Image (cartoon, rainbow, N blue to C red; front, side, top):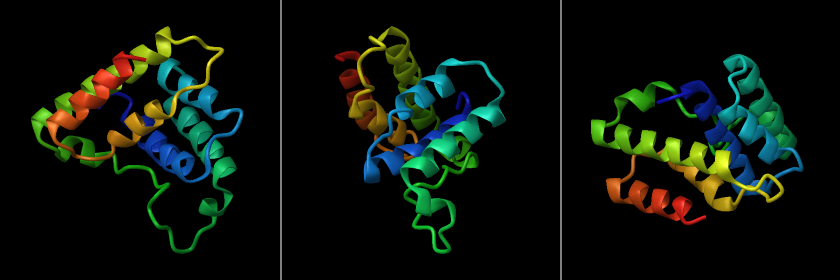
Length: 137
């Protein structure tokens, strides 16, 4: 998976967003994380900072539920080759959308869902459907 550590953190951020919504900075964090070539660790920290703005109790939770946890990077390599291929295609589709979108519009919820999809091993047709929906945006 390209930018695996960043995507791992973004999956946790997408979980926080699904529970609590976004802040005025969330879209910019997503774009910066996926489109910039800045230091990976700095981007992961930026994502975590945003996640804890959205869901502050997660930063100190003694019994994490996993909804906002970073995805285990190793799992990207453990899935079947066809699933890895589809996740890579989905990642590329997300990045393509962010590159071409009108920056004055909010990132649609579909993109946050697509980021969350990267944390699941789904059927190939599920990824294909999501990719098709993003291309229609």
